[in-house]
Image (cartoon, rainbow, N blue to C red; front, side, top):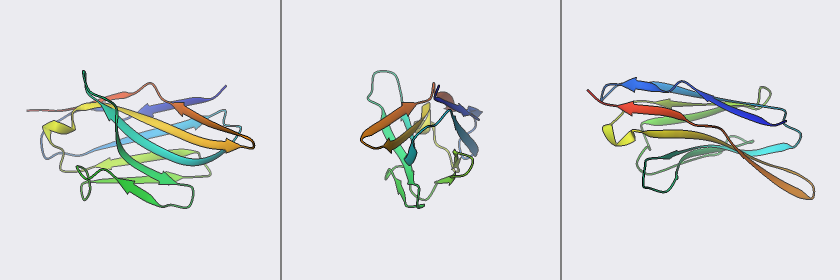
Length: 119
């Protein structure tokens, strides 16, 4: 059974930092892309950052220069270092795992972790 579990969310003051972690288990396919997404009530889930198995990264414009995504392929884990946090970063952050086992593609989500940036 595939499980994707996030951790590390919480309450932080503006300008502060947090590290989110994601661990995948029960994986039976080749993981191609791991990513972080976030969602606030009433809005669509949006991409924060992704990282490929080769280490190529992609960031939303709103987080470039502040967030850093990293990945440990052997441990099937991923982290998101978030610096200079702003109130607009407040959201539920979700880990996503995409992969393939020919001929099928697979996509799994974690349950989400709340990040609140507030005084």
